[in-house]
Length: 284
Ligand SMILES: [Fe+2]
Image (tube, rainbow, N blue to C red; front, side):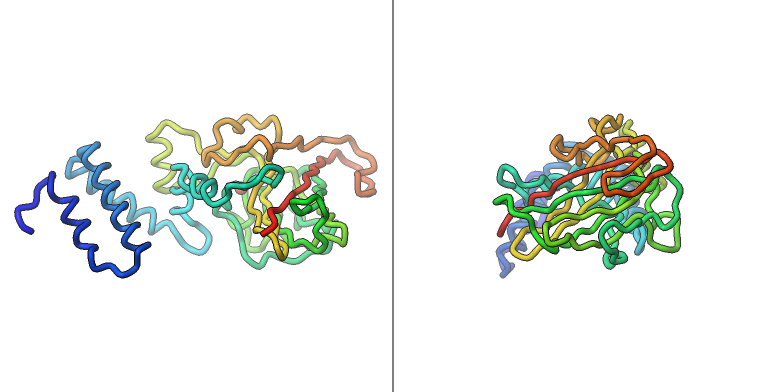
């Protein structure tokens, strides 16, 4: 084919995939070209705008390293991560809802015994987290594996400004599926907005904030891995989370308590917060 024009180009590009042996690769390639060409036809970019788009993607790649994942931020802020999450987690009623993994998960966080303090001496309002992990049928899951990670009271994750890990840890539930730990009350935070995704948000007239939350990843044999957050009730960004991750069933009161005996029996000489959330995993 020669003399291709704006009316014939798309079909010719798709025709080039005719010898593709992997049906999934063929399906994805065809859809990619169809939608990408439709997008270009709709917006009719100038040559300069096309160059800006290439520069934007190049800059996004250059921002990525082992601590910064600008492409996940881009996916998150365009709602793609939540769409992929929704498609892959069409959960039955009663199972804890999922939300995005986010860019701050770290594999191999420290293992802690139940009830441990994971603050690593970071200042803030102490917060006790307690919960039970259950299966869909209501029975507790002994020894369920729980990963917790969160920001501090200023809205920063350890990997953003510390040389060591903090406010994250791995636990195993007890024989009744119960777990607990001491951490800090997290605050709302802006996603890192000093890169191309931040520039995009400003150009779109959007703020970069996420409502305060704690991340959980929970796994147990015979169950689907659960990746979710629990959000702080009353947070002003619940309805405008920059990554679209909030679900009503995942909102809880991060209750503030006066000094006294905490629910785990610990004597607190300063005010503290308490979060309780029970998780239900989908059996597979
Ligand atoms: Fe987060």
